[in-house]
Length: 281
Ligand code: PAF
Image (tube, rainbow, N blue to C red; front, side, top):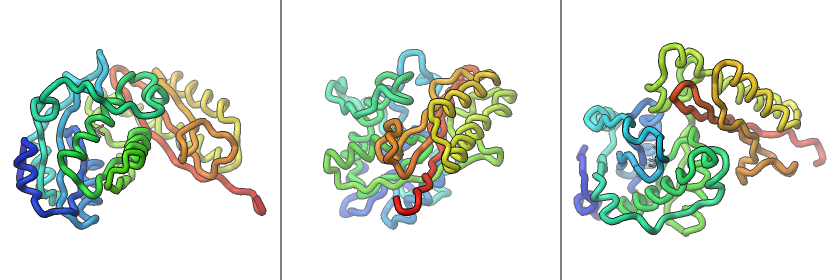
């Protein structure tokens, strides 16, 4: 496995390849990332994992400075998982000049975007740059970052990028907590409490699949339960899977999304659910 820091070297390495599969990451890898790499390998072509902590997607006061940089350990994990190449550009390679042209996706101010202004603009901008640098035929993103996956799919489609976006399932700890690099910030007491986010979202999904339709009531009850256990809730929201907008009644598939903070750590999760379609409908 080669570790390259420059686009020119990456191009040399990938010359003649048209089946490259990209797994974009910010490093500090865990089993969830490694599952994405396995999925990428199954797609058949050479696998490039990128590692870049992207300042554009962090707001003022967020954890850009303390986000764990663990390149050596990450490379060892990627090598063991069979990745062919790590692309780890530095700031000068990614942003040689101020990035004054950026991608402004829809829904940028909704859900996670409401409490993280500019976040999805930063994500889409760096992902478009990575796509142009690596020129993959496929790229793999986790379902845990549901809104990110939705917006990257929309960007890829609407800009006619010749890239297939593959979605990787969320990998969970035995108690249900979705794996995340940010779980490492949790104190032992917070870690014990953290699975509740998944529990409340799953509970809403179960109720939706049993035909409950009081979305605001379900969302409110979940927010109250989290708050009663010390969480500061950014949102709990039921949305249509196809649009990521509030349900209008025409949906056949919904997703329940949530983001909430325990102490200084912000966690996100989501649960997809189908809806029972009435016979003859
Ligand atoms: O999901 C992430 O780790 C990041 O948002 C991504 C897609 C690598 C862009 O920086």
